[in-house]
Image 1 (spheres, rainbow, N blue to C red):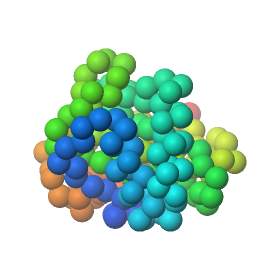
Image 2 (cartoon, rainbow, N blue to C red):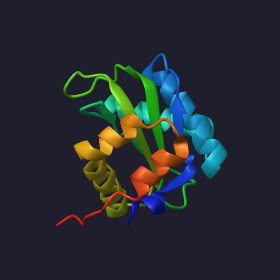
Image 3 (cartoon, helix red, strand yellow):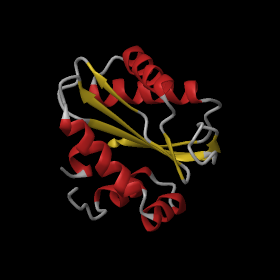
Image 4 (cartoon, rainbow, N blue to C red):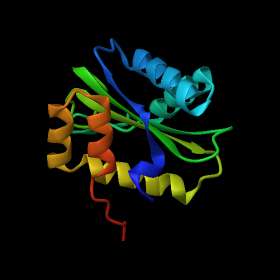
Length: 154
């Protein structure tokens, strides 16, 4: 599995500002509906439900909100770069500016975990994060993410 299998170019956006986590989930819902045909409200509800289990801010300015959804045919993703970092209840209490949301079929099982691990490994790379933070063009951000070397989990 590669990030290019999960992330469409149109699924990459730069967001000027998002005032709250809930507003960010609305942005993700709108993008998921426009690009993947998912119900905006279903996406929002699923992300809020998942976030209530525990924050998905993984640290170092990165958040990985994710959900399994009915109606999703294959794992898909959305990447948002926030021009103004926001509080995301991250494990290190640092504000988040890089958000990669994943949506998987309810029956995805291990594939969902593999996709989450792939995204997590990619965004733990300080060089990739530095490139992402230095660029503001969605096409360039997509290229950085999809051209990143991907290693298989052991």
